[in-house]
Length: 304
Image (tube, rainbow, N blue to C red; front, side, top):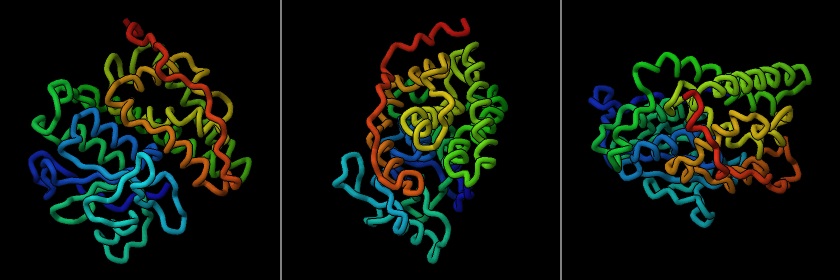
């Protein structure tokens, strides 16, 4: 996975040159992308929808032109901030002649007319930690602390192995060029799913009794696993539904109102099965699995 190109930070005190403020920043995302999805969830959980506007690209990704805005596609939008038709144009506004990867998410500064950051982990952390409670929509969102100081070391440690072996582990499996290149990441993927399963056998969430940033970062991959990665990415040893604790945890996470509303499975499935020609040259979108994320999860009692 290539590194991203813009790494400025919004800070609560403005010392970075990008102060937290309402109606200054705009988020460009795809509902299909698990990394962009992290930031949508962070924005939603912290009640920042009124403070940070958002545009959603089309799920259809043309490899020659990149992500596009298409208000005629249900769930997608136009670019109401810069009035562009392609995400590539946003990058070129920020950096004329830009030749790097055109990726989502993108956090845009309306005032400076530039990209603040295009690294999903950074954007998620900013949303969770840098926006004063005055920007949140209600008291519960103001009080929600998903990166508490006493859990930060544990969160960082979990993020490291989840990212390396699960978040991008599925991509390493999908795009391996040889059997040997595939065998290593697929083994590590399922070793670390087993690790998460064992953790969640003892406690409701990855760091204990409360949801944290670490749970959000695992959730977006596991949400897509049985419907996409299990089939398309050759991650076929087990489904998440075969893991009692991961499966219950996934439903527990999904049933949080401010997470559920960020999930667009139509965008997810259509994007993956039609945008990766080397994996699915026919563009056939398979029949959907009978996966009921609203099924009772019973996770409240775990660890008590």
